[in-house]
Amino acid sequence: MSVYFKDKVVVVTGGTDGIGKALVDSLIIMGAKVATCGRNHDKLYTLQAEYPSAHLHTMVADVSNENDCRRFMETTIKVFGGIDILINNAGVSMRALLKEANTEVIKKVMDINFYGSVYCTKYALDSIISRKGTIVGVSSIAGYRGLPGRSGYSASKFALQGWLEAIKTELMADGVHVMWVCPGFTTSNIRQAALNKDANSHGETPMDESKMMSAEDCAGYILKAIRKKKRTLVLTFTGKRTVFMQKFFPKLADKLVYKFFFKDGKLVK
Image (cartoon, rainbow, N blue to C red; front, side, top):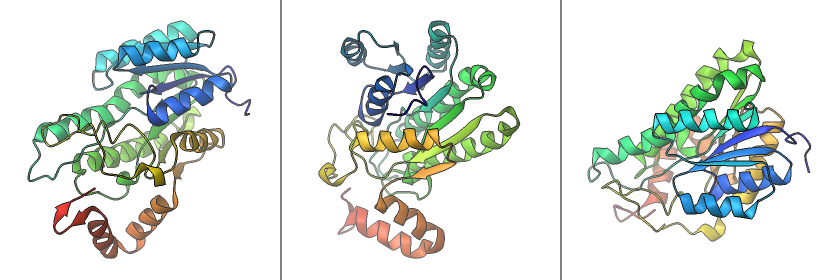
């Protein structure tokens, strides 16, 4: 068990499901002071009940709402005195072809995945700078390679990585570490909660999650990367292979990605 996180104040957005919940569980075990948010009051209540004696601050918040993000950061600082590490984890996916999708689905995905990270980081920034802390963005392989049926999701992750790279350079002289992590396919609620062409939740996933990395393993790799102050982290063999192919053989990557996601001209994944 790492002592690196003991008594550090760590904010994890979207901490009631998937990778976020696994991060919260691990951080509490490591002795961190954890703050997390989510849109579901019952899930947050259950989380609090699971750790009644832990240093855990929770708040109902929608990260696409700037005022919610501001209040979440302000209450965290009030409860714990500051913020050492911010993990921008909250996110939503989508599954819809552009020719069928309502533009609202793309806007909604951008508001949560990109602007949610911008809002939370902005309102935590002064405290993180004062503590020479760390800012993390949970991105995706879709931040390196656009994925069909997930155009808005891919756009949000490309935007997130470009933005993080920019502020990483801006904050170098302040002693703040900025990094982004890109899980490959991981067992997570993000696919069940993925938005359809009308910007409503699918409620199911076509992916076989039994072959994916567990959220717990993913969280372990993320925390190790934070501790080692890595610049980026790409997870799973498929993820690393995709990034490699996209960088050196983009035309071949186009064909392989098409073959993976389509069957008889129809989106199947």
